[in-house]
Image (cartoon, rainbow, N blue to C red):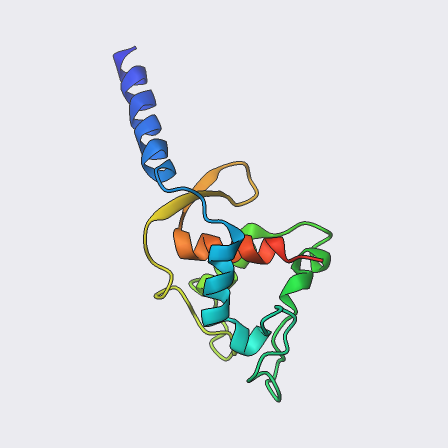
Length: 134
């Protein structure tokens, strides 16, 4: 019984530590997007950034991520794409932002009902992208 209570308290402490930081709002992610992504994907996220001309492949329209995934925003996939950690094709134009996206973590539901600690800036950009889907 004592072991179960200790486990419950420890689990609650981990969740509480992760939940201390408030979830970012889309404007926070938009600011990071403008700093890191808009040159390629454009200020509107549709792929027409200042340096996008002639890029092969062309930068993706980030406002259509849900549409390309059956109407569901694939949070885990988007987080992984932005972070670049699992990207195996090093010839891809998309840079890795893993080193830029450090800091306190926030709990993000990546689609399986489980909360996963994600660096706040990474979560902010993903939440912004989710907010601009059409």
